[in-house]
Amino acid sequence: MALDQYKEEGEEEGMSFLDHLEQLRWHLLRSVAAVLIFTVAAFLSKSIVFGKVILGPSKIDFVTYRVLCRISEALSIPPLCIDTLPFTIQSRQMTGQFSMHLTSSVVVGLVVAFPYLFWETWKFISPGLYKQERDAARGAVFFVSLLFFAGAAFGYFILAPLSINFLSNYQLDPTILNEFDITSYVSTLIMLVLASAIMFQLPVVIYFLSMSGLVTAAMLKAYRRHAIVVILILAAIITPPDVISQILIAMPILVLYEAGIQIAKKLEKKRAQKELEDNLKYQDND
Image (cartoon, rainbow, N blue to C red; front, side, top):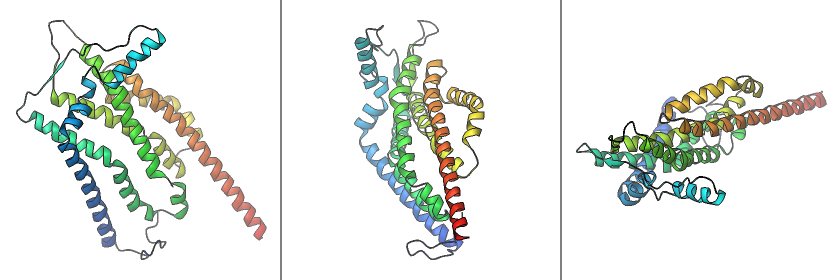
């Protein structure tokens, strides 16, 4: 990185440390403003955001449960229909409902504003990159946002409902009732969704590590078994203590890891081809 080695779009070369701090301040202010706007919008849309989105997986008419039922009917396999979710959600603290309303609104604001937040971050970082590094990372905002929303959707529509269904039906004894506190329910849902969104960034991480030369496709292949163990451990940490949820989150991450190996291969081929072209140009000049 070289913050003072080039000019771009009229920016002065050799910006001072205070100038960079001023730029960072404005990037942060715009990012916070975007999150606040979406947070306020989510807070005012309580019936939709909380009633339908947050509490959606706790209701038997949730889209995932209906799709599972239709799949079992179409394939003539044992019914996968969710007829009941034997639990109730309670608020045992005076501020429970308000605090969870506020918390969920902030999380929704962060999720919706994520592409803009990453764009502001990238806009601040990219001037410190060499031109070839910026060219190689073109489209970063799009792909990072796409993977983020794909991971969030996977966590919300697949991981969360199946985990909630498992935990709500698990009983030590029929006399024990499942009465979950609203704080526990919302925290579990948020953790599953955000953890999936973050884990889905694995190909991006591998891309930048490979681009910087810190990892290679051969290295990723050699440590594949170690990566599987690490992924399973992370899946066990971020998911409820049931095997199904752990497998569900581990499987797409393993697929993304393999995709990362292919990405590293392509980068190495491009790098080798560029070096060959540079050598040929050098020989022609001689």
